[in-house]
Each structure stands twice: as C-alpha cells, then as structure tokens.
Image 1 (cartoon, rainbow, N blue to C red):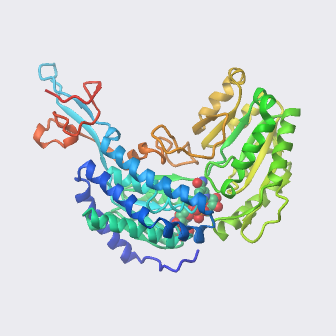
Image 2: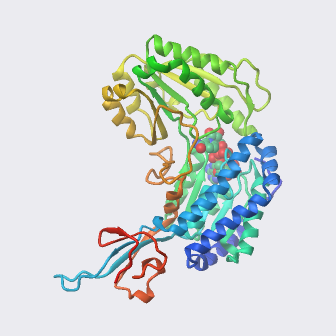
Image 3: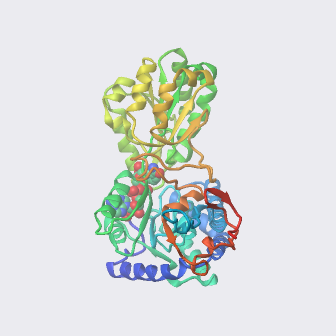
Length: 497
Ligand code: NAP
C-alpha cells in the first residue's frame, strides 16, 4: 500500500521504542486521576479538530460522513469512559488478605493488584479509522492501564492517523506527560510490523485486521526470547441460527433487518453476519426469497481501499464457484470501480460441511444461507464452526427449550451470544464482550471493547508483608482512593483499621 509518509527505519523504531521504555518508568507511577485527565485532554484536542479529522477520514476511507461522525464520537466516549473507569479502579482487581500471625503456620499480609505491562504497540484497523486506530480502543485501554503506546498507522488512512497523532501529542504536552508516552510510526509491508513486535522494549500488542496479519504478529511475538501477549482481533463470520418457531413467526420481517446488517458500511464490519443457518421448509424458503429481494435493491458502495475491494471480489467469486453454492441474489445496480456488490448465496449443509473454504470470511456485503435437513444436521454445522466474535440465535423460548444441545454447542464457539437481533452494532459498555475463541481473536479471555479491555495490558503483582507507608495508594489500609477492594473475601470500600 502506498502512503506519502516514508516508512520508519530500524534506527527510528529503536529510538521510538527506547523513548517509550523510558516514559514507561515515569508514567506507570502517575496517579489514576492523572491518567484519566490525560485521556480527557486527548478527547478535547480531537474534538477541537473534529471537522478536519472527519473530512480527512472521508477522503481516505470512502466512508460516509454520518458514519464517521458517529465513530468519531464513539472514540471520544471511549477515551473519556475508559479514563473514568481507570480512575474508579475496579479494573485493578485489588485483593487484600490481612495477616493472621497467630495461625499455625502464620498467614502473611498479602495484597494484590494489576500493574501495567510496559510499552504497547497498536496496529490501527482499516475499517475503523478512529475507534480502532490511532486514539482508538486499544490505545485508550493501554493509557488507562499505565502503558505508553506506539501506533503503527494503517497505510490506508495515514493522514487521518497523523492528524489524530498530532492531537495526542498536544494533549501530551499540555498534560505534562513524559515525551515518549506516545509514538507514531508509518510503514507499509511486513518489515515495520515485525521490527515493532520483536523489539525487546515492546511488552504487548493490540491488532485488528486480517487473519494472516494477526497470526503473523502473534507468531513473531511467541518466537521472541521473551514472548509477549498479542491481542489480535481477526476474522469472524458471525453465524446466525434460525430456529423453526421463530422462522414461522417472523421470517419476512426479519429479512429487512438482515439485509441492512449484511450490507451496512459495505459489509466491512467484523460483526457482519456472513453465515445464516436454517432448517429446510417453506418458511426458510420464504425468508431466503424475502432477503434476496431486499439485497437486490441495495446500491453498492465504495469499499475502504482498492486492496479490500479486490479481496472481496476474489473471495466472493471463489465462494460462489464452489460446488453446491447457488447465487440467490445480487444488487440490481452495477458496481463501479472499488465498489462491493451486495450478494446473497445459498448451499446445503452437506456442501458446507465438506468445504472449508465456505467457512472463511468474505469481508464485504456478502452472506450465505445454509439449508439443513433437520435439527441434527444443524447441530453438526454448529459443532464444525471455528471460534467467532458473535453467534446469533433467532428463536422463540420454546425453540430454545427444544434445541438445548445446539444452544450449548453455540456457547462454546462465541464471545457474544445474541438472541433475536443482528450482530452488527457493538455497544461500548462494561458488560460487552468483543472477543471470541481462536481464530476470531488470539485470546478469548479478554475483550477489546468496554473498560474491561484495560486488563489486557496489565498483570497481577502481589505485595507480601509490605508496611502500609510503602504500599501503593491503591492497597494502603485507609483506602485513600476510595476504590472497591476485596478484603478478606468481602468486597468493600472500607479501610482497614
Ligand atoms: P491487514 O492487512 O491485516 O492490515 C492491518 C495492519 O497490519 C496494517 O498496518 C498492516 O500493514 C499490518 N500487517 C498486516 N499483515 C502484516 C504482516 N504479515 N506483518 C506485519 N504487519 C502486517 O488488514 P486490512 O488492511 O485492514 O484489511 C485486509 C483484510 O483484513 C480485509 O480484506 C479483511 O478480510 C480483514 N479485516 C478484518 C477485520 C475484522 O475486524 N475482522 C477488520 C479489517 C480487516 P501493511 O498493510 O503495511 O502490511
């Protein structure tokens, strides 16, 4: 990919990572409130350049203004709400077990909390130029955890990334943060990413993008002398299971909502419903026909960059050419250059089960309906699916009771289990889980959306027998920060007498 910014050299990367390492030793000791204030300052600086940044992103990503304004506001909300969560301190998981000197053997005083990992390298996502790029969710979580950040700008929106980086640097100066708390690197091709991930000062990685990209970074991180965690969000086809009762009840109404979910932002969402599974019969046929009719009327849109448009074209053509796959419907409007044509396909469950290619993500406005002969075959499809960010169940309460084994199998493969809805639209809140079993992500124990994402960039440290005056504020007897702590198995804000 071509950008007008020059690729960082190995020497420049060394310099940035050294400054990041130095900044870590200063920033990690800053009070939680100071971190939160810094994150609010970034949001303010971005807000001051909102129009300029949104217009830059429009020209670089082809995404429409309302979508980008929404995403921009979501990014500010993430910075502010993760900052507030940082200050509230629940994420620290403070645990205190006070000493019992007269027990045999005596119990020592032990106090545990999460502490920052060190410099985090973030790879911006092409499909979220704000919310999952330079000042996006990974960056906000890392700052909240007490880690400096080095961003590798996505080469598809380098100007937007540069503009956001300037806002962060202004906030850094105004908030009197250590200089190396934020670094910004350009570079296309694998060399820059490899140098960043394998640098000895890098202690964790955040990534959103392709399976091949995320897996390459994960492998390099694990081959290091000191392996480090990589939180990579990669592909997902987000299966939707239509159970018979629900299909009977509202197949036609649901088709409209699904046509819009499949084609939203030209299907360029990690939660795009790329696979729909139902049991053969007149209701499923009605649903396929209704969904096909909706898809026909959706006008193609320009995709994020020519590379993604080309991949969509290739992957779509490959999927449609597989044995047993029929094209149900395509948009009646012919696509222009770099546009993705909305497409609905269909195949039998046996064709799907026998062909791994049909399990792969076609990133763009595409979905395939899988027709199962019966309940058993539907379950077989469920058990052959790889890890997913989301799984959706379209079902009545009776359906759920009658398909208990299917429901259990689905819980096993996803991070978010949706009932009677669409998977697109990810709420930024504490209860959100945006992550799933491999290959959806490289670590299903964590989320990349919501303030719990802060924990990705921290590790537990237990202090044993430390006197009160030498403990961190978070663990002192008086609880001066007024955070929630578990003391001798009781969750409380009380101090220790
Ligand atoms: P990408 O190709 O994975 O690139 C993401 C970032 O990682 C870029 O900065 C890229 O740099 C870098 N990178 C990729 N492969 C690398 C490697 N082997 N070594 C080092 N760095 C590497 O993702 P994309 O450009 O956003 O989109 C490409 C495809 O990814 C899409 O067609 C889609 O299939 C998938 N995608 C999935 C999601 C999702 O959420 N599931 C989101 C976006 C994209 P360079 O470009 O300079 O190599």
